[in-house]
Length: 366
Image 1 (cartoon, rainbow, N blue to C red):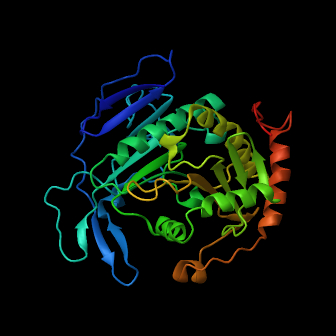
Image 2: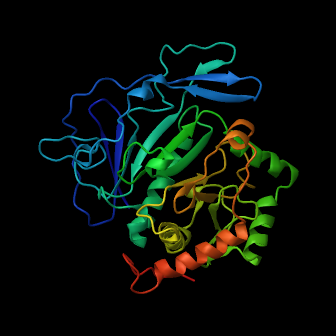
């Protein structure tokens, strides 16, 4: 992997990630930009014991522009974007961040502190009409290296307690930019979901190992190889939800070996293709969320894993988080996980069989 860091016109950082032999990248941002916004406010919800970020500046972020005006495409003559020139994979500080290192003059008080942290955007490909599922295994490996690089960098950022790489895809999810991309949040606290994991680890330090062993021996595995296993979890919350675990317990992406990084794409790409083929829709809406150990907790017991789920429960039906889920946090799943696993296995077979529409050869599938 080759890194090329540059500074954008407003002082934000951008990093090109390339393969050896790729051409040099454009290093000058020719735009005139205002100063980036100050950090959000963090307000404590005392009843829940949870922090809420108040980031009013995000109301001004770009919202579903036409393809000709996409800010994540490479810049071209007559139209400058966030990325000064062609790229393979790129990461940069979000122009409208939920958390920021810019905390000068921030207010503090009981239940109030600055939203100190960092938020980045990562573009997986320069192809506006592409998707993560279209990447080659070599390009997935480059994305893995970029995720690991940014996990290390954000973990070393003052105030950051947890690093969260994720991808949102589809208008149904709420995506505001159609270009295939993800984000990385450096939270200034441990998120509620991860705090539940830490509580479980306090009760049983080997709970991840035990759960993975059970899933690998069960009937909901979709695909696996020497280093990774993809399965529908026993207590899936979403109608179609897949977890992808490295078979070796590691705390985060930066701790993965070269062999493990190489082996991720051959497991993950078929699962994404199975999602897209499940209901024969052009792009299945989904969220792909990396669960990593917090920066200062459970480094020896946490188990890195990816949670992938869609809000689509049938070809023309969405799973809405209504009263029980949104108000009480109590999930009710409409589809048995065993049925979902069976449907996804059938879809995976269709999507990865020779001659399938858009099929590219994926080595290492088992």
